[in-house]
Amino acid sequence: MFLHNFKYELKMVLRQREFIMWLMLFPIVLGTLFKVAFGSIYSNNDMFKSIPVAVVKTSDNIVLDEIFKGLSEGEDATLTITYTDEATAREMLFDGKVSGIIVSGDGASLQVAGKGIKQSILDEIVSRCNMYQAVIGQAIATGDMQKVQDVAKELSKEVDACRDVSPSADNPDVYVQYFYNLIAMVAICGSLTGLHVATSSQANQSELGARKNCSPTPKFKHLSAAMLGSCVAQGVSMVLCVTFLRFVLQINFGGNLFLVYVAAVLSGCLGVALGFFGGSIGRLKYEVKSAILLSCSMVLCFLSGLMMGNIKGVLAEKAPWVNRFNPVAIISDSFYCLNMYSDYRRFITKVIGMVIYTIAFVVLGVLFSRRKKYASL
View: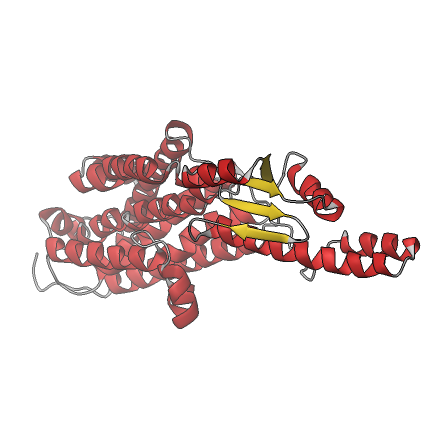
């Protein structure tokens, strides 16, 4: 009897229009729009690239020449230097071919045509060049060449005041968080299938619910078969969502792709459990409960950063407890932790949070469902 109920509950879920629209078609459309909007922003604007700069030499300066040589060599060179005269350098600056002009003589000076990250980096480089030149110049003035070598050696050392955390850094693209939140939205919209489970077991909500309540089959079997069928259907939709984003849109989630699928399936079960819990409360009609669940889901998605990427940072500063308990934020953070950290401690913490939420919603939903009694059917 359990397998019979499971088979028909699974068929019923797959025939729901809400399931097809919100869990199948909507993530495909929204994911494609995100790809078009954010697909190349990081590589074009945010990823650090060598800064093009024109250097105008007014006199020979061995110290500055060596510094510029070190900054422009290697695969990870900070600067791409073009040595030229002042007139050509100005023309290159105004044409946007270089981000600044460094005049090298007794010291270094910077000329820029605007403000931005690259200009700030160049300003810091010029300041350090002048500082290094002053220190080395004082050492040269003493006439002790050993001291000059010692000073140069100390200046070449990198001072690191930070502790290594060892992030995995599989995909540092900050815009991938929108796709994490898209997966979380699909998961939480699975509450519609959980809502169907709850309302289809209530005699005052549907004729099917009335027949189930008249059936000799224990109510717990009906509910467990329906919940399992909904979780399987939701799990399939989550797998399809991740597969579409990863292999069709070529979104790099980093980390372990298998664990991405595991987290996605677990988050889908959380969404179903949330809908089951919400549908078991009160005697409102299915349409009203559906509207309430969707509204609450969209609010949770907003707080998690689906519509505004920096909202999580604002909440972390002003009200950190909000996303600490927000199930959508927990889901999206699980993908973030899997991508950015080499150890799985943070990821496991988020997964445990999803499991706890799922169990709590299911238990509360069952308790509310079992307490319902009807005067007549």
